[in-house]
Amino acid sequence: MPKMTGLERLLTALKLQEPDVVPHFEFLINQKVRDAILPGASYEDFVDYMDLDAVAVFDRTAERYEPVDASKKIVRDHWGAIVRFTSEDVPHPVETPIKSERDLDSYVPPDPDLPWRYERLRNLVKRFKGQRAIVATLIDTFDVVRDGLRGDVALYRDMIRNPEMVDRMNEIVLKYQLGYIKNCIEVGADIIVITGDYATTMGPMVSPQHTERFITPCLKRMVEYIHSLGKPCIKHTDGNLWRIFDLIVETGINGLHPIDPEAGMDIGEAKAKYGNRICLMGNIDCGPLLSWGTQERVRQEVKECIRKAGKGGGLIVASSNSIHSAVKPENYVAMVEAIREYGQYPLSLD
Amino acid sequence: MTVDLNELSRRIIEGDADKAIELTKAALEGGVPVQEILTRGLVGAMNTVGERFKRGEYFLPEMLLAGEAVKAAVEQLKPALIRGEAGYTGKYLIGTVQGDVHDIGKNIVAMMLEGNGWEVTDLGVDVAPEDFCSAVDKNGYHIVGMSALLTLTMSNLAKTIDALKAAGLRDRVKIMVGGAPVTQAYADQIGADGYAPDAVEAVMVAAKLLGKS
Image (cartoon, rainbow over all chains, first blue to last red; front, side, top):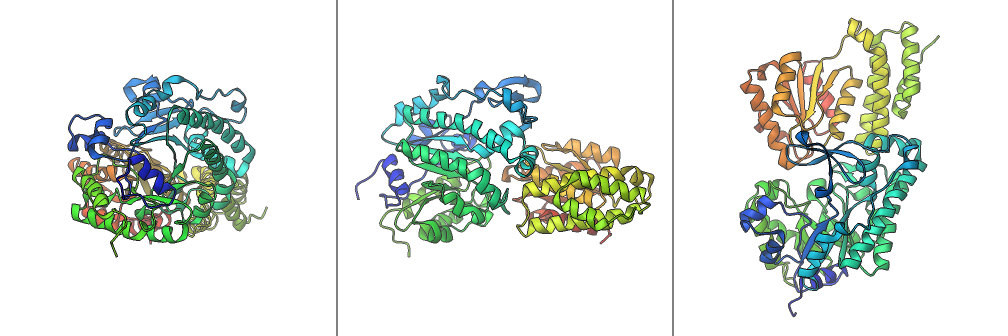
């Protein structure tokens, strides 16, 4: 089979066909890990060096946060939530703008049409278009309403006591998201990824009934819009998804990430049940395995993942969340090398 | 008036805080001993809620509403608990370790403990080892419960235990750890006294550590 570009490889996998080799990319690769592999390199140079199949850009506006208290690393995000960055620089919402339903009447959502949001995406398009897939990611409606607008406890209370208010908040967020998606695709994004978790390792955060009532309809509207603009969509959600897997697949997504083995998600089972409808992405444990495991174990897990889910295409091997700062750099390199070694189509692993 | 503690229990399970307050007040005014309100009204309810969560019948919204209801009922009982009419099960200090902001699991454990008669102090999220130490030093707790939800922040469980040791406070408290990436083996390795994979078990482990099970 002739060698494909990263873009072709990913689009082929997302069409549930076999590419030349199992594709790989990550939504996030921590700078510490990147620096250990290629010191001082930019993200873009690292992607070239590792020959990753895609470059990813987030709808992150960290440089545009409004400072509230610099000494405590407290800022206001573009949804109006007060966010504190922890000692590990993880953002944590401490106060949200919608305290009561009345606040919705005067709420001004962010503007998706501001050109600066797409500066980074434009640069990636300029450098990689046509070679590596340009992946634009945005955060799920459920996540934004929970962390950006309303706060988790209030939102969960609304789901039971005031469902119409949840609908109103969903509409506000969706309007922004559809605008953002349109702009990303116009600028040159090839694939849209929607991040935001629906489940914990124990199971869905809200009941399947609430998931169907409040969460998956928003995802479906985004997916249908992305498809109407001719692009595929990958959904990311951590956790044990078995009880809501059908609901997620029914939204029409093309791919699902990360099929986390630590949350009880077996990729072989997912392939057997849903492999003819969606592409599966992820599955290499970024907890104990990539953080503390040996390179040999990593290679074995990659091989096993491809053996279970690679047949016929529809597989993108990646970490089970991201390459975070605790991942051993040599394990990430071992993972990428193993994907290329064992992932050559036609597969010969059985 | 006759007070139906089963009704109180039912209302907490349904997450009806207003009704829980009303029924708890009525029980107190009707002369029902605080201990009986706690055990028959609140503890039973929270155990049912915990079991439903564990079985996958209750999810975060239902858990949080039940938690608010039990908290509201405990507020009504507080004056009597402080006067020592029933007495708390014990004093529990809880928090998410430094660098980590995940708090739903920790909040559920805190709520289950309160519903089981524990006096719980919640230090919140991203709690530095020295803040755990100073709270233990100042207020004296029976148990310190720490949560870490990220592989990245798990090591801060060990760091906090080390800080308690360095401050000479380790022997004053029992230590429990939990969170998605934490296992019994890891808890043993870092020298914790107890580990629980979920909130229901956390309550059982806490009772055991205090010699009350």
